[in-house]
View 1 (cartoon, rainbow, N blue to C red):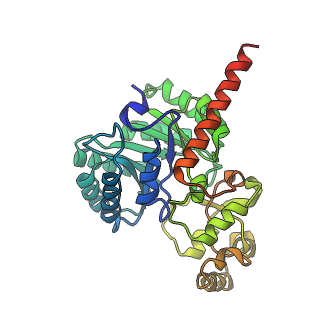
View 2: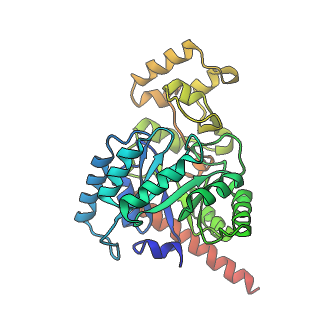
View 3: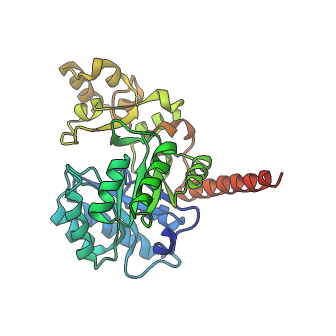
Length: 349
């Protein structure tokens, strides 16, 4: 069995859109799945609107049914930020709509995910697959034992948005996780790679590491289906040299008033004036005031001496045009196929 067998509408190479809160809603999730990937709605830690998002997704899918999609599950996924999400409300919505997968990320304690896993499997009769995001070998082993997930998302430190403040890049993290899981009897768990991948060469590299699929978030910030402010999108398109122009920090959460993230988690975003004014990571009242004023400027809050948060990964420098989701996936598949052809040709030399 391969990961693709659980999602019969999906195509090889399997591309997954990350559940970016407020941005990855029904239009993007459905568009990714309709283009042969697996799209995730970003429910985040506030599940009050989840029913409405799933209802919209169901409507979009009825309007344009997917070939080979199961009739028992909704051919998309839903991602939760577990430290803040209400398990009872989440389980009720998931049980009603039965998405093909749920994605868990950042519980207060790893043990909390055992209850989430049990409740989701009970609510859907085991039809909804369990995906869990991890960023270290230790977490991968703990989650494998606690949850017996169907999929582990191995996220490297180059990823945009929230992740471990300390961690390894995907090139070393993925194989170490795979080896460690195999050594203790969890080699059957499907592994997908995430973190810093924005185009076909990165996808090909992750597949070479042994990933069954590859997650992208930053690339879909420049999709026509993303629910993203134009100012945020323009900063993504203009950013280059992502390892230098982005930073993982707690500054943006402090300025946004987003409290509750576990201490070991930070958010990677594009460096802006708010970050530069936060000397040694300390956010002053003056900085908070300036951020609040920037919120009143709309799109200019990102672009004019930008202060508003723009979460993005180090692959942001590879994102330079707005495209439909289908065009993004088609372009990536073409790039991967070229890389495969080149590898086969060179192996014969």
